Every structure is written in C-alpha cells, then in structure tokens.
Length: 299
Ligand code: GDP
Image 1: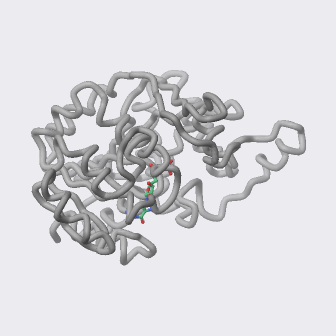
Image 2: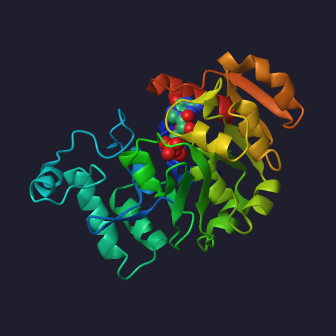
C-alpha cells in the first residue's frame, strides 16, 4: 500500500503520473486542509478537490485548479450583482463544492469526501488530513493577512514575516493508514503551507519514522516551480533550495528526489538523507509525470 501526502499543483501532477503506472486501489492520498474555508456560502477544500478531479481525469491541468472546460456563468453573474468573488469558481466546480457543503451538514469532511470520491468512480482513497477547521494567517510587512487574501488579493507581493495556523487533530484513520503503508511519498507541494501542516499533526512524524518515506523537492535551484513556497521557507528560516527542503524532512526521510539541474546539492544533502536520486522533476507533460513516478516507485 502506498500513501501520498499532497497539497495542490506539484503533487497532483505526480499523482497523474503514479495513477497511470500503479493500481489505483493500492493508493491513499492524505490531503492538506489548512487552507479550507467558506467562500460565497460554499465550503472550499481546494487541494482535496484538485486531487479528486485529478484522479477522475477532469482536472484543468493547465492551472491545476478547477475542472477543464468549465464555464463561469455564476461567478460572472455574482460580480454583476455586486457580490464579486475572491476565488474564481467555475460552474461545474461549484456543483461539487455545493455537494460537499450539503454533505457536511450531516457528515464530517472525511465522510463527505469519501462519498464524493465513490460517486466519481475513484478507486484510490482520498483522505482529509483533519476534520477540524484551521485558520491560516500570514504575518507580513503590511500586517496580518488571511491566507487567500495574501495569495489572491495581494498576489503574494508583501514581505512575509511568518506563517501561522491553528493546531488541529488528525482525521481518525490517518495514523493507522500511514503505519500500514509500505511507502509514503511526500509530493512536491509547498513544504510550509501544505506538507508541514500534515507532518505536524499529532502522531504523524512518529508514524513516518516507522515507514519508508520518499520526497520530491518542490524547489528547483533556488526557487519553487510555482507559488509562494520560497517566500514562506525563507521567512521560516530555511534555505530556499533542495537542501533547505531536505532539512525540513530529515527526521524521517529515507530518499530524496532532486532535479537534474541540482546535482551540486547532492553531496550536502547526503550528509542528512541516506539516499538521493537525481532526475527531471519539472513535470511539463504526462511523460515527465510518469517518468518521475517510475523513479519513485522503482518501476
Ligand atoms: P502553493 O505554494 O500554495 O501553490 O502550494 P502547493 O502545495 O499547491 O504547491 C505548489 C508547489 O508545487 C510549489 O512549491 C511548486 O514549486 C511545486 N511544483 C509545481 N509544479 C512542480 C513540478 O512540475 N515539479 C516540482 N518539482 N515541483 C512542482
């Protein structure tokens, strides 16, 4: 059994490759939830939805957000009605978000997601990291900002001083699944706002120490492939490089996959991680995604 820890963008790209070369029934994806919140009255679990859409082949794999060929009639009408939305939610995407919101009146987030993935015909398990709500805020030079305000309204431009999220408990089945896994893959997602929230849940680090853990660096050279991971890592005192990422995961990581452009970091990373693999990690096509999946799974 293989378990993948995921945020948005980078890890879903890798999941797209893994699901083509490995039995879907054998895959569990534990997904970050700290960025979840209500927008326009609907519950938005962006990373969970990206994983669900990826596994059911409806993801918009140009933006890695929302559904391909979606329309934005409701979003545009809301702007017309003087209710502009911070998030650009497509019509089909909104239907899944409304379904989740309705389900959550009677179910936990984990249960709601499980009902959704079964209805979508997804054979892999998609697991919310927690059923509790967490608030994530970014301390900046212009004051404290809600995560999505920093990301969208301020376009990640303010200087970041720190990133804080409230402590929450893991979803009931997470630790058991990690302990039973033959391999845990930490995908190339934002280490600070997507992966650390999962790893710092009570019991997760201990479970990871007992399993074979492989991670892929989301940083190539001295910058992330996309998004604010570099800014967040620097603010939290980590070097923005594959070595900096390795230092975040060093307590439990068995193998670290870095990009072929980053050979110069190998020697120093080997001082803290026993195995370092070098390959192309910049996924621009399905072939790139499958090749990276093969290096990780040893196929
Ligand atoms: P975000 O920083 O809020 O966008 O957080 P996400 O958890 O969605 O993760 C985005 C991360 O994915 C960024 O740190 C990117 O560097 C990483 N990423 C995106 N595409 C790729 C890719 O093709 N290869 C690698 N190695 N990382 C990627």
